[in-house]
Length: 430
Image 1 (cartoon, rainbow, N blue to C red):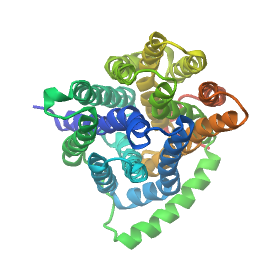
Image 2 (tube, rainbow, N blue to C red):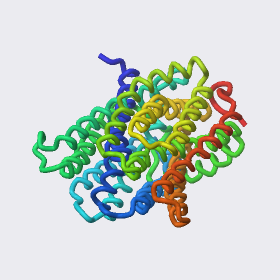
Image 3 (cartoon, rainbow, N blue to C red):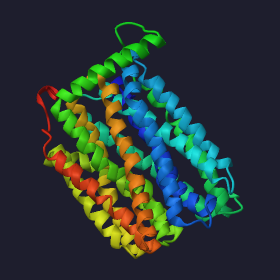
Image 4 (cartoon, one colour):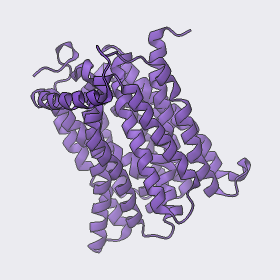
C-alpha cells in the first residue's frame, strides 16, 4: 500500500501520463500531419503552416490573458483542482470532437484543436502549481522529472498504439488510415479523462483559512494579482528567470508543435515522421528521469544550459537537413533533453517562489510559456511566408522559418546565465 505522501506524488505524476497523450498523438503527432494531408489536402504547405501556427498562437493568447488572474483566484479559493478539472474537461471534449470532423472542414478542425490546446495549457497551470503540495523542496527535482518521465511513457504507449492503427488500419477494422487517425483522437480523449481521476482524488491542496464565495475569490484574486506583480518586479531572480524561460521555452514549444509539419513540408514520408516522434517518447521516458541525476551532478542551472545548447545544435542542423536518417538523429537529440529542460525548469522555479502563492506564480510561469507559443509558431510561419514572397523556393523558405528559432534559444541561455540558482530558504527575496 502506498503511504499518503507517496499516493499524492503518484496521483500528481499520473496527470502527466494522462495529458501527455494529447501532447504526443494530437499536438506534436497526428494533428499537424493530418491537418495538412487531410483537412488541407492540396493546399500550399507554407499557407497550411501559417494556419497551424495561428491555431497554436490563438490558444497561447487565451492562456496569456487568463493565466495570472486564474492562478490568483485559485490560490485565494483553494480551487486549483477545480480549475484543473474544468480545463481538463474542455480539452477532453474538444479532442474527442476531432474524431467526427471530415473533409474539407479544416476551419472547424482548427477551432476544436485550439480549444483542446487551451484545455491542455490551462490545466497545466494548476497541475504545475500542485507540485508544491506534493513535494518538498528537496524532492521537487525528482518528482517533477517523475511527472515528465511518466508523461513520456504514457503518451508514448498510447501513441505507439495509434501509430500501429494508422499504419495497419485493417487489423483494427478501419477502412483506411484516415479513419484510424480520427479514431485515435477519441482514444486520446478517453485516456486523458480516465487517468486524470487520481490527481483529483489523491492530491490534497492546502486549505485556505476561511471559505470564500465565487465573487470574493475574484475580488481577492485581482488584489493578489496586483500585489504579485509588484513583488515580481522586486524579486530580481524570479523576474530574470521568467524572462529567460520565456525565450528558451519559446524555442522548445515551437519545435514540439511544428517539427512534424516541417518534416512533412520537406517531403519526408508520414511513416518516418510518426516513427521519429515515437522514438522521442521512448527515449524521453528514461532520459527525463536520468536528467534529474544530471541536475544534481552539474547543478540545475547548468543542466538547463546544457539542454539549451543541444537545442541550438539541433536547430542549426535542421536547417540543412535533407535525409530521413538526419531526422531520426535529430529526434534522438531532442529526446535526450526535452523532458529534462521542462522538468528542471519547473523545479528550479519552485525554488524561487513563495509556496503559498504557487498557483498565482505558476500562472505567470505558464503565461510566459504560452506567450512563447504565441510568438514561436508565428515566427516560423511568418519568416517562411516572407521568404516565399521574396522569391525563395518553398523548401528553402520553410528552412528559413525553422532556422529563426535559434535566436530564441540563444537569448534565453544568455539571460539564464545571470540567474542566481538557489536563494536562501528556497524563496526569492528582493
